[in-house]
Length: 198
Image (cartoon, rainbow, N blue to C red):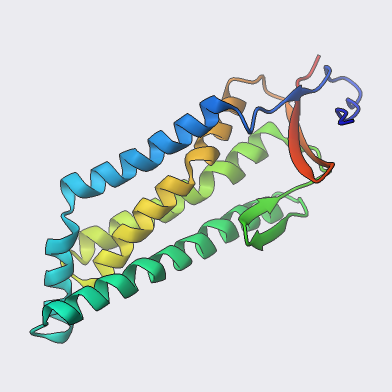
């Protein structure tokens, strides 16, 4: 049977973090759809892809055009996942924690460590802000290039994969200062708990 971890001195009884809630899943999906919608509205992919390929290799046939697009998307996906998770990892390390990183599935964990609310919020939101700022800058500076197309893929993938991070950030934002988070693994499942100061 699963049990909540003991509360540290001066803290209330633990509350589940709600990582598997329906609200979290819906909000994560909404963030991803919004990112894709922005891309479709403001950056027509096919037009930019054609321009990018023409600028990069000159006259392109439809086959070469399609191949470049097909190759750009998985490249942008892999690059984004790698950078996103390593920013989570670096943020946690810089704040004095001992995180573990994996790519299949992609995630960074701080299991069995009490993590301060502020530190957890910084770790959660850092990849969303940093990757999207970099991608947005590249899209603006390299408009119409293959690099710009890759940056747009990174923007959409990063925003979509940040849905749960954004949910976690705002879940902690409503908690009082001094709150800590602890993640434990029980019966093969990972679950996080929050402890608010008394």
